[in-house]
Amino acid sequence: MLEQFRVSDFLEWHDNKALLINREFQRGSVWSAAAKIMLIDTILRDLPVPKIYMRSFIDRDSKRTRREVVDGQQRLRAIIDFAADKITLSSRAKEFAGKKFSTLDDEKKDRFLQYALSVDHLANADDQLVLEIFARLNSYNVKLNAPELRHAEFQGEFKWSAHEKANELYAFWEQTGLFSKARMVRMYHTSFVAELYGLLLRGVQDGGQPNVRKLYSQYDDHKDFDREEVEGEFDTTLNWIKENVLEDIEGSALLRPAHFIMLFAAVAHCEVGIPQGALEDDEFDEDAETDADINAIRARLNDLAVAIEAEDEPEDLAEFWSASSSSTQRIASRRVRFPHFVEAISGE
Image (cartoon, rainbow, N blue to C red):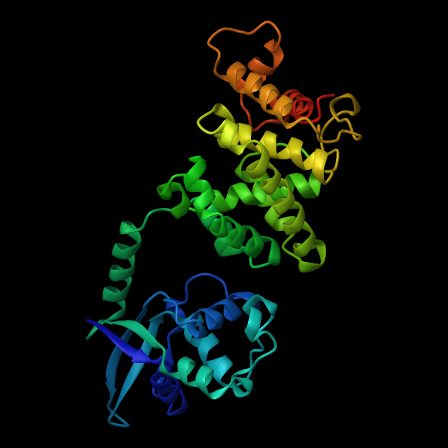
């Protein structure tokens, strides 16, 4: 039976020792501090959180109702700890940074205490029935893909910056057709932004989901990721594309993720500079700058788009055509295509 209870109800039950947490049903690892802060931030913004599973029974000795949490334990522990001033919100919570429950203003305290949590009540459920319910729930779930698993695993500024930037660009993904709504729901646009960040941080490397995961892992520590600098370089690069060539490449092969990433890399190289990465010296012109003749750039990009779509090998872009037809995530393909995109942007 689905019910709703306020945060204040759970806090009262906890204080009265009427809320039990069954550790035998604990699933997954203990939450990090960042995950707890994200939950509290979600509640303070009155956004939804997953429902909690709970069963009730009468304690014969005390003649009182006991409520046992079987799923949602980490959420409730975070809520209880925040109410007890054991959690201080970080910069991840933006305007709430540095706040404990006791230092919130009265309106925010009320919002937190009155927040309604959805609870699925498992009436008269024994352990066997609870396990059966969980098994059935999991059988209906769609298996998490690589971007979703990374979003659950990592909690650093790299993950949050890529996630927020990707959602900020929702209209751009729709306009360009780079990602459908269905793929955005599965967080592929977030993974793509993370890979574009990787170009700015590490230069042209092998692509693919395993290598994107390495980026999340490497930059999960806040000290290794300058969010303001990377977001600034990202915006400079993307805005240049939007303002100068986007209209001309709409509907072309250059607005497929595999080719757009090389266009982005070339523009970033000419506009803000990127590391050499896995490229050889003769594949990386460190002095390349954006050509002042935008019409010439548009014409050269059109030539590349036409070559990608060509059925037969074009004489003047044979190597580029072949590399564009192979595994475009691999460095072997990218080391061929990147110089062509740089030449199109710089004219050199």
